[in-house]
Amino acid sequence: YQYLIRYKRGEDLDHFLFIPERTEGTEKECLKLLLEFCGRHNPSWTELSNFTHFLNFQLSKCEKSAFCGPAVGEDFQGF
Image (tube, rainbow, N blue to C red; front, side, top):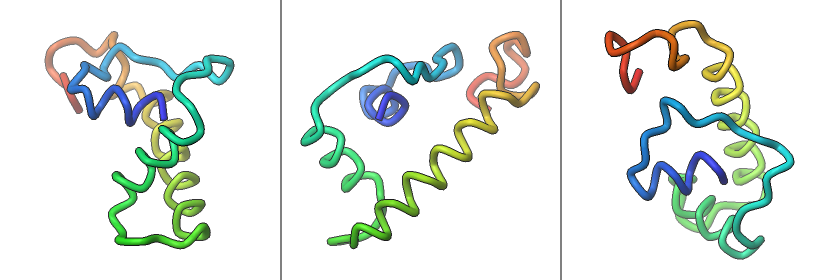
């Protein structure tokens, strides 16, 4: 949710890091955002679960990647 809401607002994600302890939004807002970004019309709970697990995995890898960190500089901005 933390990444998706910032992406939707058009914020720069290059310097954002997920903080598990940070609570943002309500359950209803989170579900609405997941439904919006899932890419399926009327997805099942299994499809939403798969989407969130895949997104979490990809974002975790991105945060740990040397190519996606803020230290990389302007050469890879938005990568």
